[in-house]
Image (cartoon, rainbow, N blue to C red; front, side, top):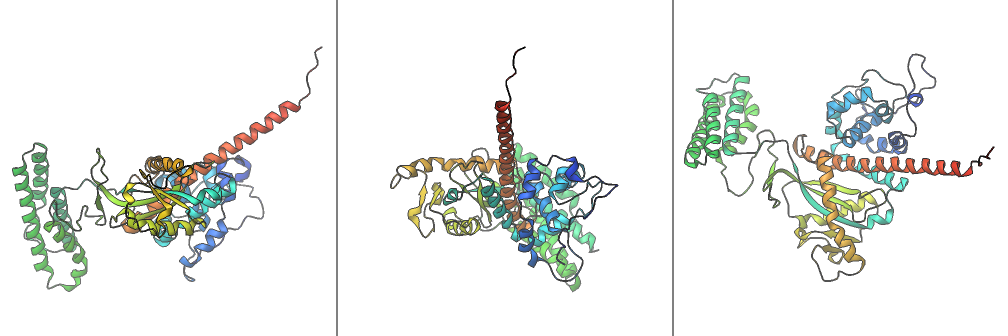
Length: 448
């Protein structure tokens, strides 16, 4: 059921303290909370809820928790714990009185992510609107953008054949034990020892011995798969429980290093892809490709992210440019005039190629365009901040939807941090100007 709108209290509570009496109302979080259009966000998410059932958690509270989590780079549990101790967090989420205990369920953030995960672009749009209203961003800065891609790594271990085969054997054994399927042999102890020895042989560069251990694991996994299929063929009620695991285990058994086509790199996250970006210190990264669009110019408040999107399937960068720019224009409400990209976008599919300028390009590059093309590399620090100060460096959310949510919310958190810094500096300049005016208007002290 759609959550109820927050209603302000009509009177004071003698036994609780009002937040506006114990906090600094000029704090940047308080100013930002008053500038966010919570009613607009409520209306945008109205169709995500049914008309029946128990009312959901308030929109301002849950969206505020998401924004605080991404802004301060906190985990779900950390943001809940800090909310109890921090009155500014409570004011930001719409509370009027200081709360000494959580009034909502901690699992609410997980439920809300699943419910509104594909609608979180509105938060990125709202951060851009606030930046324009506060003067940190000008609308003309939205016409010239820089686009680049990076890899958002998943929270998985580095995949090896021995690890994957051992994990498949362990998981099938646990599943058979859960459903009381008797196995001829589970191979749990033998598989763990073989995987350990394969790692040791690989470290010692004894590759023939390592390959023998991997062959041993692949043979035992095949035996286990056939044994389970024989045992459950007369029990149709167990087929739905084993179908996904058996298909995943069979694919792990068949795949080998260097093969073409899709592969499984993690048992619990089969959507993970292997992406090579040519980095010397990290030749291969395991996750999903993410496209980021930023302003080319460094605005008054900083360089803002205008669009973020996960690109499953690891598509060629140039084939994604047309869709990315179209979605960017929909978010900003401004037509893009110039696009600056790197050499990975050669052969792009943008319908107006004369508006796209690639690094190293000489033809048609002169004057202001030449200066703006030099700033193309300024998107790299933005990507670094999203990974180091945000959650893009390691994604803990599940599935393809989790990849998209994490990419968008990392961009939202980056913009929020810039806006908070801008509001803090703006307040400091305002106070300094007032002090100068006061000091200049004071009468001179006459000597006695």
